[in-house]
Image (tube, rainbow, N blue to C red; front, top):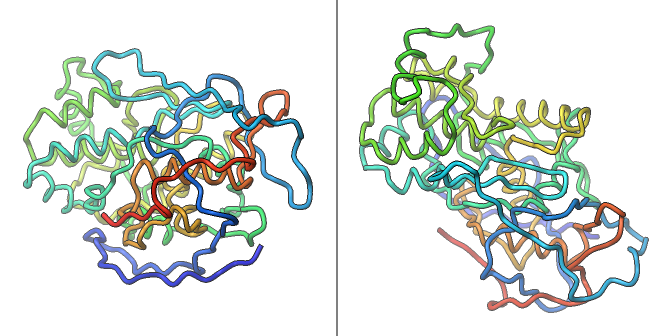
Length: 372
């Protein structure tokens, strides 16, 4: 498969304040390419979040045929489950052996309710790129496939038929637009401020650190404050849903250790923190064969979609990358990966399940572009 160079379109940088670096991708985006007429990926439905039966994701082996006898209309049964906590908009995303309770919808919903002063406060701590986040659901068939192809030892994405793509902190900054400051988020460099912790807990009726993500989301939506505690709360929500989540639906309260001095939030190296969290999660995932992957699948998806281009679903090149993508586009990309045979899906008995390449899904437009 040939690799075609895609020239990046210049775009205004909405980068965060504080110490950040100009990021240039290590290599041009690879064109995954397509054959035949443009495929329709069924844009009406939401991204597939939950697989009702155990499913494994494999890679099409070059030069080998997949199992025969697949019916064209056979499809994976997909369902969506909601958290048992009433009023909580958090979904438990499951696909086969992969689970992720980290839904970007919490950030999107909070941003929608923010006042102009609150948005200014978010920009002041270097998290202004979150204003452009539009993805609310994750296509977890694609997510599981990317986790399989992420090498935690040397940090490349090992995509079949392409050279390894080494992921760096600069790529995290380029994709998510978060600060890449000079202060490492390391417990050895910080001490927990008990006064700040007590003040944070008093915001909630339970007076506890065991706060659910949905509870923190609703708290942020209902309060108009734009002060120090609002900034801490927003970062805690971002960490818990986009960076370094938990196995359950609780927030990551450990990050409060690094948020005592709010003025220094923009100077922390959030890009290294995200990449380190991905590495630790993948190593843990391989050792324990756990069904949960509470780390930044969103980053992996954006990076892959940006660097390995399929023309039918291609976003305008933006800085940060997340600015150019919406939920339907990621869902469409996943379906095209399956249709083109790059993402091959098997059940627990290693039997091929669909949809797969024999019939093109419909598409309303010849190609899907997005410029937000």
